[in-house]
Length: 171
Image 1 (cartoon, rainbow, N blue to C red):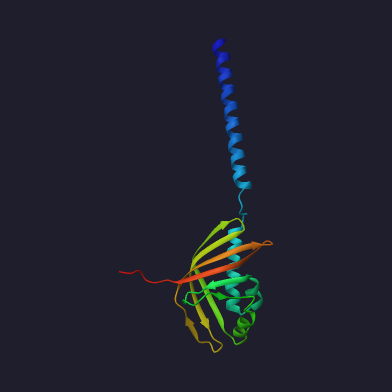
Image 2: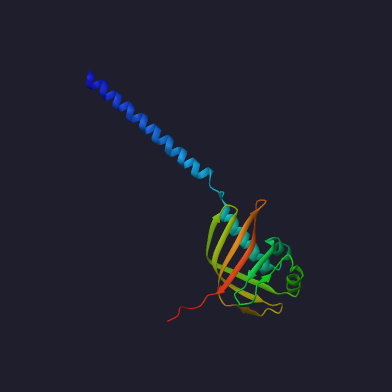
């Protein structure tokens, strides 16, 4: 009787400990999920925004281009030029280029998105081709690009972009 009673208390105590451990694990898991600053689908939403931006350059869609970036958006382009302020301040410049038939085919490879709440940093290798109205095209040199995207009102918009030439390794 004593051993049976002791055994039953031991089993009950183990079950209680397992339930506490399961409850602790559940609380820990829920706190990790609920306290995460990024929401499910944000990575995919950033990639959709990047693709829309690239498509606007390829299709000559000034409205999508301008609406893809925040006011004050700036870019350090890979050609080594000084800081470049772009739309919406440069809307007329890009519209003039699009009206003349100029298009830009931008392709990204090896895209990585890091999320920090309502901010995302996208890194990729970029290859772009400029296509003129007469159909001639010029491939630009490949770049490493970093884009900073900010989520405002549920929409991802680019705040900053930095490009640098992708050079072959030095011997």
